[in-house]
Length: 270
Ligand code: DGL
Image 1 (cartoon, rainbow, N blue to C red):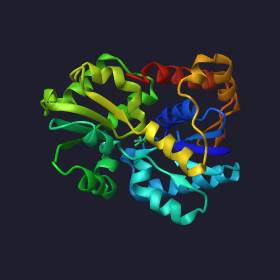
Image 2 (cartoon, rainbow, N blue to C red):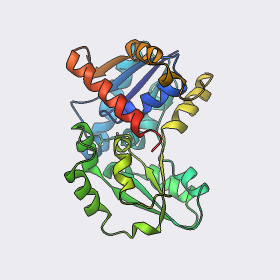
Image 3 (cartoon, protein in one colour):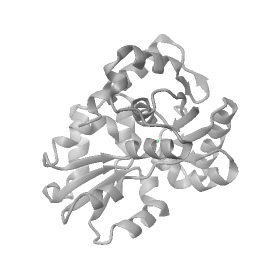
Image 4 (spheres, helix red, strand yellow):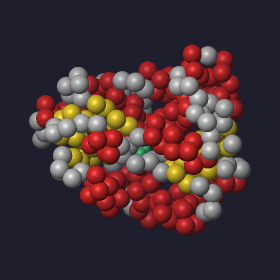
């Protein structure tokens, strides 16, 4: 099966990375819209336009389904994409439901881009699952920039987090939900601010499981692929990467992707 995965940038790699773990035998086409990142500061109309072009591009490459590995694009474009294209199109959803169901009493923080926070999709989700009003929302647009620059654990990142968190008493939180795929790269940095028992939850695992379900694919035993470096390299080499429609084939860019996958592997179970 050939699966297209796209995002505004390298956040979507965290979803592809999870797919390597759970569905290592599939073929992937990964598209990062690096010319237009960040989506989180664009208008819904602009984002819908980019998303439509990308899905057309991926369909042209022969994909059987598309994963919108971007919470922001999912928020504003998923309905439109599904009504425009006939192949299965899956989106991201901030993992609020597992956070609410897996914890009691204490508060839950959901971090996302300004667009995701403003849109009805997240509000509707909270309306459905956050019965006791335990969820707080926090926009973290600058983390997208830091991730794109591969700056994860630096003074600037820590002071940005400190400033953003300054209105909250973090000891009241039992879960932190990553509602933007770019935020995965910073898992160790969040740990410096929250209690060690605080759950840090992203939506990647749920999305890939859902993909397997929709496409009738069997999940692999987790982690198998990374314990076998040859299989990992083979999967990586079988994947076609594009930056805004341009094939990624320079050594520098490929090295960057390998570095990013390495980082994602390090922080995956953090
Ligand atoms: N990675 C994206 C998300 O999940 C969007 C980040 C951005 O481009 O602002 O929301």
